[in-house]
Amino acid sequence: AKKESGSSYSFFNQQMAMNSVSKLEMGNHLRQSMDRNELEIVYQPQVDCLQGKVTGVEALLRWNHTTKGYISPSEFIPIAEEMGFIVAVGEWVLRGACLQMKAWHSILEDPLTISVNLSVKQLNDERFVDKVTQILEETGLEAIYLEMEITENVAMQDEQLEALGRLRELGIAISVDDFGTHYSSLSYLKRFPVTKIKLDQSFVRGVQTDDKDRAMIKAIISVAKSFQLQIIAEGVETEEQADFLVANGCSQIQGYYFFKPMTADQVQVRLQESLQP
Ligand code: C2E
Ligand code: CA
Ligand code: CA
Ligand code: CA
Picture 1 (cartoon, protein in one colour):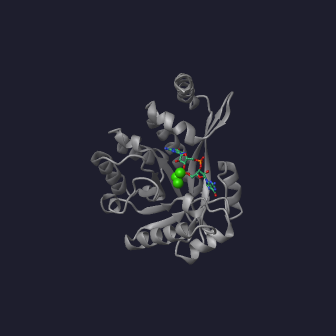
Picture 2 (cartoon, rainbow, N blue to C red):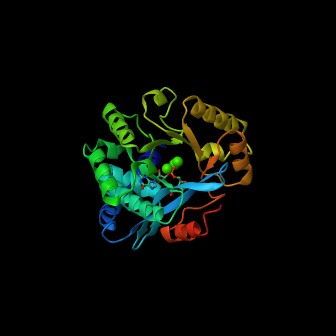
Picture 3 (cartoon, helix red, strand yellow):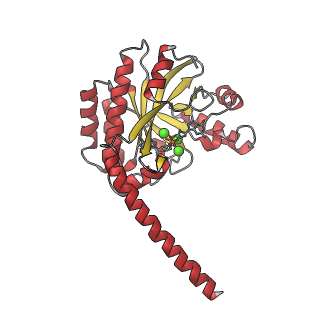
């Protein structure tokens, strides 16, 4: 038995070593990916079911690696965070998304909002808020049309909360992503300058099958109401899920049921068809 555990231990080490090599390799490629035009932003529309129209889009990053093909952001964002260039990647996304939304505003009667995912690590950069201000000026997008989605995978520090407060002061909306799954506890909403809760797709998935998920959704919607926050559900794939959410007071919906993430060109086509879901 000892021998076995010994060999599995060295196997484990090999795996770890391999993982860190490919991580480093991936990280180095990612560093160059922006210059090589391998990164792309796709956009997923957000629908307000009561108004019956699209009110915003979320920007989602895509990496088309030259040899490995498509790599998921859930794979490379953590690497970018670990290796420290999430700041550069995040800035690239923010500028691109704001520029794109500004262009859409020029062809739309009702301006849409743009939601950009923010890594907590970006808030550690003391120049971050100035950078955001500069990007808004540069692109001409008004701050009230920008929303930042933040997921908590570690408890936030005072300096990070302060940076969020400064973003709020600029007029930028702040949304808690994946609400209910990480550190985003109730007491948190008290100190956190948030405007919106994003109901996680793991709860939405259980709408038809799981009493507890339904209870969770109702509870989170009521929390949003009590705190006078907006609420949007993500990962909505079926009519039943959408109906349940709307019936229980969550009329903002994002998910494959209405729209998958699309390229800017594809969104533009839908905009010209007046964006009816
Ligand atoms: P997220 O912010 O929670 O984004 C939602 C994810 O669910 C996206 O995956 C989206 O494509 C997917 N999705 C949307 N509708 C549905 C649906 O109906 N069903 C299912 N099964 N999935 C749906 P994606 O694009 O692979 O992004 C994964 C995660 O990577 C994001 O999760 C976000 O945390 C992160 N991410 C993406 N872009 C960025 C970025 O620019 N910056 C940062 N920091 N993180 C990003
Ligand atoms: Ca998000
Ligand atoms: Ca989410
Ligand atoms: Ca997520």
